[in-house]
Image (cartoon, rainbow, N blue to C red; front, side, top):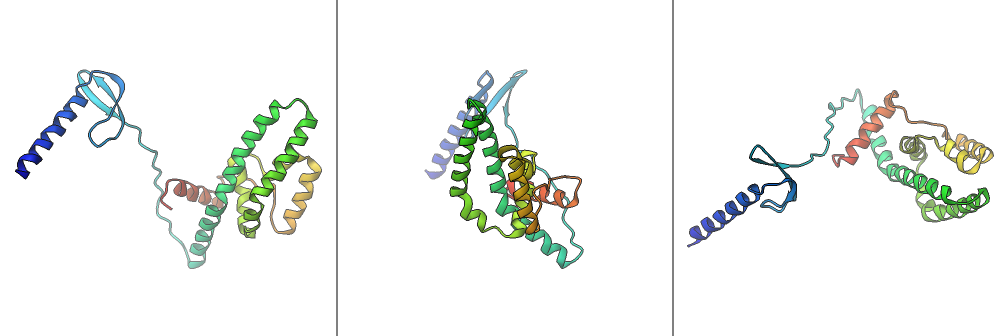
Amino acid sequence: MKKLLRTFVFLLLISSFNTAFSQENTGEEVVPPGGARMRVVVEEGDTIFVGTLREVIVFPPLVFRNRREENHYWRTVRDVRRTLPFAQLVGREVIATNQHLLSLPDDRARREYLDVFERELFRRHEAELRRLTLSQGRMLIRLIDREVDKTSYELIRLYRGRITAGFWQGVARVFGANLRTNFNLNNEEDRMIERIIIKIEAGVL
């Protein structure tokens, strides 16, 4: 009886599978057995399921010359993991802020908006940012340039003026950082960081 039931279910699945394949459409969505929604295209009487595969980037295995180099790599992984979400947040906020500023009538309204926006941004994220180490702060500066194609110094100068940018650059230099740091794939360190980011976003690191 169980064998007969399994055979019946199997024939039912085959029947539904053939039905899905026999639909004469181009680019229509169907749901084949298993529940995955896919598009189908009919070419010369053949029905083909069409799907988009996520890009996969394969790197050669890392070879460390010594323990110090390996430790540096894993510290970099840690710092990228910690700061990448903040850099991506800056990227999103820059886009949203620029769009809003364009809608305001004059410079006074823009300055008032930036004052309120800055206070709110600090209120939401100051505690987290204060917990960053110095190496993570330097990483964040580098990743901000990667996200928005502008250095932190350029962003501050753009929104708050040259004097304010100069002041914060001086503060950063006291702590061994540089707001003018940019992200450059011609730099070996930045190529390693880019590799780490790709692997993190692919979920393999």
